Every structure is written in structure tokens, then in C-alpha cells.
Image (cartoon, rainbow, N blue to C red):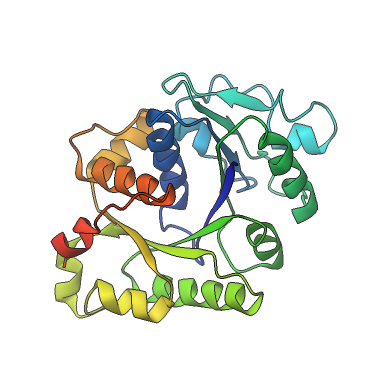
Amino acid sequence: MSKIIAITSGKGGTGKSSICAELGFALAKQGHRTLIIELDFGLRCLDIMLGVKDDVKYDLGTVLKGECDIYKATTQVKLANNLSIVCAPEDPFAKVDAETISSICNEMRKYYEYIIVDTSAGTNESVFDVVEQSDLILINTTPDPICVRDARLMSDEFYKRGNKKQRLIINKVDPDIFKADLIPDLDSIIDTVGVQLIGVIPSDNDVVVSTGKGIPLPSGSLAFKAFDAISKRIKGEDVPLSFKILLQ
């Protein structure tokens, strides 16, 4: 049974798309057929992060216009045999509804074990409608008071809609940030958002380099180990939250 994973955040700039890319690479490396569907219309970036910017001939926009089917709009990632992507339209005004995305996901379930949906940032109605149909919602925040509050607002709305399939990712964590008295520690972020933690991703320049070049993270990097652990927890494996302890 395939799993649809929506990755979302209440605020832009939290690294949502890089999380999609690196989780995609991690799951594919573990042998799982993985598809990323990018919904950040007008702000397409995953083609660069996955190294396929010159290979994309059709995207979700051409599907919505009826110019091709979803299979033709699916691009294979060259550096990961098990990873493919459907890129977002370059048109920021393209329209899509939750029913269409749900239909596409259900069609692609036949061929992929994991479908990662990269939503647009923010708390608009369309994001909630799309995300709440997923099997798992990963809410992403950084250790910044504004981002944490926005993540809590998103989580609260999902709970109001009866969706408890939420997990929290804390991204771009630098231990020095806690010395600035903005946020006491990681536990305070978890308590504020009110969602069970699934992983902590340290601030790591390797992420900037890998997403800029469209290549997987080096296996020795701290970020790679974090994404590898998160992907295994998604699969139900019992992996200790070692980074939480390390970064406090």
C-alpha cells in the first residue's frame, strides 16, 4: 500500500522544498519507488534541486490544461533510479483543486510506494484541502518564533478538521540559536506546535550545495544522517531521535 506524504509549512523560507528533495533521495536510495509532486505554483525549484531542470518537457500546468497526461509530465531523476518528479507550473496563476490532486495521487499510487506532495507555504484554504487528504502530514518549522507560531496555527487547523496524522520536522537547527534567548530549546518548539516530533535537521552547508547542484547529500554529512533517519521513521522503523539530544 503506497503512502501519500504532504510536506507543508505555515511560512515560506523554512526549507520545505529541500526537505522534499532530500527525503525523496533518501527513500529512493533505500530502494523505494518515490514520486514528488510539486504544488508551489510560479515558484518552481525542485527541478534544480533534483538536477532535472533541462529534462522537464511537461509539468503539472500542461496536465491541468489537458495538453498531456500525468505520465508524460513525470520526469525521471537521473541520479536516483527510483525517484521521479512532477514539477509545478511556472505560471503563478494556474489553478488546481484538491479533488484533482487527489485523483492524480490515487492514479500514481499504482506505480509508486511513496508520493511526496510539496505544498505551497501558508495557511490558505487550498493548502488545507490538499494536505488533509494525505496519509501523513509533515509540518516543517525552523527554530524561529514566527515560524513556530505559524506551524502551530497550521496544526491547530488540521486538528479542527479531524486530522491527527501529523508529525513535526524542525529544520535548520544551529545550537547557537538557543543562546540568543529567542526559543529556550527544541522541547519548547514541540510543546508550542503540539505535534509529535519525527526529526531534527541541523543547519548544514551540504544541503545548500546539494540542492543548488541537484545532487544527493554526501553520506557522511549530518544532514544526510538526519534525512535518512526521518525516512526510516516514516516507514515505521524504530530509529532513536539522536539529533534531538545532540543539538540541545
